[in-house]
Every structure is written in structure tokens, then in C-alpha cells.
Image (cartoon, rainbow, N blue to C red; front, side, top):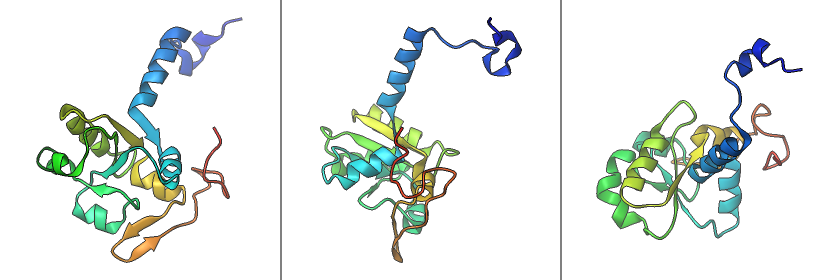
Amino acid sequence: MNNTAASPALHTPPAAPADAATHFAARLTFQADVSDVRASLESGAPGFILIDSRGIAGWQQGHVPGAVHLPTADIPARAASLLDPEVPVITYCWGPGCDGATRAALALARLGYQVKEMIGGIEYWIREGFPVESLAGTEQREADPLTTPLGSITCAC
């Protein structure tokens, strides 16, 4: 029995499986989550350059170790001197409530770079308990149990 009419979540029915597969595969070509970025950086050979697209105040407050500081407004003037066009780029900004990483990714794509954005931004990097560099040094907070399993660097999804 089909009860989708009674379900607010299904007022608009799900896409056909083939359409859903195309959509979700496409999303993965544009995004990477903080856990996968962290695991890649930890490997020593991530295969990408991580760009922090926030302004100087955000960068100094705390950034992902190993990230390159390239504010979105500076991308047109500075990208060519900082980035190898053959190496993919992953951008991040503040968090899910900010589209700065998306704007930075768009600017880089328009310049011909292969680019993805790190969903969750620095907010979820910190909330998952990963280290942050600042003017005061490296800091690592306890993981937020609302965002990641305690005692693990991955959700194992």
C-alpha cells in the first residue's frame, strides 16, 4: 500500500532511481566532507590543495593545518602564483551557513581549476575534533558527539 500522499516528506515524490543515481554521483564530484579531507591530508599525499577562502581575521582565528590562505576576493589576482592548474583544489569557508567556499570554488572553476568544496567548512572540521592552527599555535578540541562518533575519525558511512 502506498501512503506517500499522507507523508509531508513525500509530497514531492522521490526521483526515479536512475535520475537519483545521476544526481548523487554529480554531488560527489563537487563536494568532499571534512572526514575525507582529513584522511587525505593525513595520508601525506592528498592529491589536492586545500584553500581557506576566508579573510585574514578568520584565517588567524584558526585554519586547517596545511591549508593555503586565498581569500575569494584575491583568487583572480593570486591563484596562478599559488596553484598548479594540474592539481585539484578543495575550498572551505566558515560552515554550512556560509556560501564562501562555493563562491571561491566558482571563481577557481572559471579560471580553469578542477575544484570541489569541503562541506561543513571550518565549523565541522572543529566540531569533528580535528586540529586547527592559529596565531597561538595548534589546538584540538573534543569532538562534538552530535556530529561524529566519539573515539573515531570517521563515521564509517
